[in-house]
Length: 408
Image 1: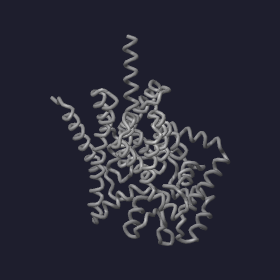
Image 2: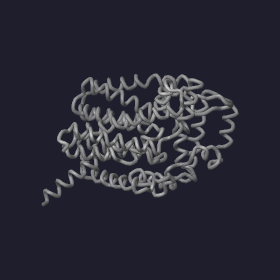
Image 3: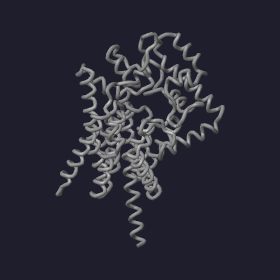
Image 4: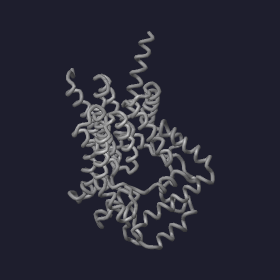
């Protein structure tokens, strides 16, 4: 019989490792493709962060955040063989995913009883999409690892703004910004929320300065090349991908945007390419996308308002018109729907007017869905919010049971 906490968490971690190992064996990626493959190739051969080439020459990237590409490149520096590189990359992701399980355990243990903590940890460990994601060359596993550190450090800061908690929060915040450029919005929100709770302006101001300094080298790189202060500049690309006459909740492919589905911009893209490999190529291209997306939205605003709410509901619950293979597998949709409804229950039952952790998580959750719904929704996006969904779901069930027993 398993008696101690250490034995229980060890068994959960072991099950997590075995499940993810099986997933990697059967579903593991066999190559680095799409934008990550292009960025890795250009880093290897040209020592430049670039997702595209013009006239055979890579142009500086401002579309994609740099952290995951640098993560892959760091591994490639030590492993030249492609198959071994992929194997090691997936093994490292397995390790990160396993550590994420432990962080979830730590997060839940600060909020719930031992029994509820282990139930939540087991759900996280065996959540099908999380297991599958580990087998893919994608930034989502690294993002889940960092978001768990971020949330754990934020919960700790709510209790005590000490040096250790501050450093962990700032580093995880900076890395998440470099992994997902839009995450700076959630960092700012978190700092504002922390100020409302702790009323300590100077310490929170110092945190903001620390995070700024950590991301400054890449911001300076972008300013030096493109003349703009930003981590990424892909609003136009993302907005057009999710808001054009043929886009759905999932958006359309890049090749479709560049002339096949949106012929309106074909000539402008050709004119830009005719300028050759100019450093600001990506910046100008994103502006072309942005202008066209705004034009589409202005021409038929009701269409895109409806589409926005379709995306919101799809992110909240389920995409009823997904084109992703095996999306409608019961193994995927059953856990997703159950967790989504329990999350909604948790929001309804735990929302209040106090600056507590539940309200923070509710706003974080809805703000994330609201932001991404302006663009497009992919199945893996829900994993970003998995820790928050778990916390809100457990809280909702706990409150509901308490209310029912009180009535009885």
